[in-house]
Image 1 (tube, rainbow, N blue to C red):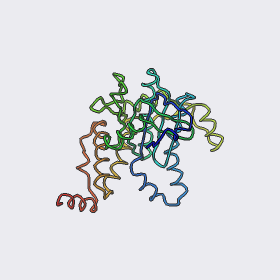
Image 2 (cartoon, helix red, strand yellow):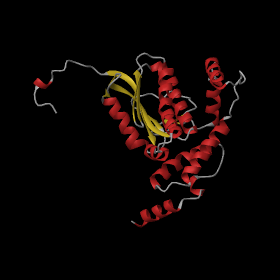
Image 3 (cartoon, rainbow, N blue to C red):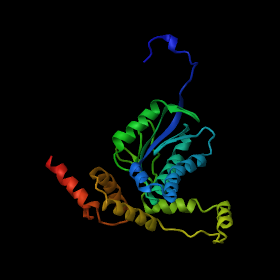
Image 4 (tube, one colour):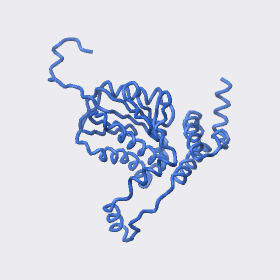
Length: 271
């Protein structure tokens, strides 16, 4: 709240029209508790956040910015309509890569006015992305703010529902991305230098069905051990989508529930 114009003594600063993405890693607090002081577990948590850094670097735009705080990630870049498709694909690939590692993210992508530099980030577009992530997304998915951002037609990683969201959990998407992004020579050289091993120049490909099955197995393990009804419902939504994408018929409701979850559900039903 401004009481008088004497408070406007900080110069001038204008917002910029940028594409903005806001993410949150679900269950991050529990991940930290489970990691304890184990250096290997801590490194796994750091790797999850660094995956966003890798996506930002891949953009190749000097104006791209990434800000992280704990499990909250804000990414933005100057808006250019021609960049939307490949940038959304990059975000979908990151979401899928994190899922393979057992991290489930929820977020939103929009276009709007924001200030984002190396030190601070704020503005209406960030407020909008946060609102969508925290109040609308609910499940582990990345919403697309359709009123602000036109969804490119015919993409195999977008569910065009209301609201539309990224949907990379399909074998054909994994297969296509893997074919487009083979292991680079400098990565092979670095691996060989550190390990003293030699691997074939042609990388061993993992089928999309195998990758999605591993994600389903991770989700199944969490669904059968969690005692939190809210966490169960969020993971159940994704589990059902992944299994359906694999052509399976099992649903989360068919899986065994922990005794703590059963008690929590019964307590909730009686209130």
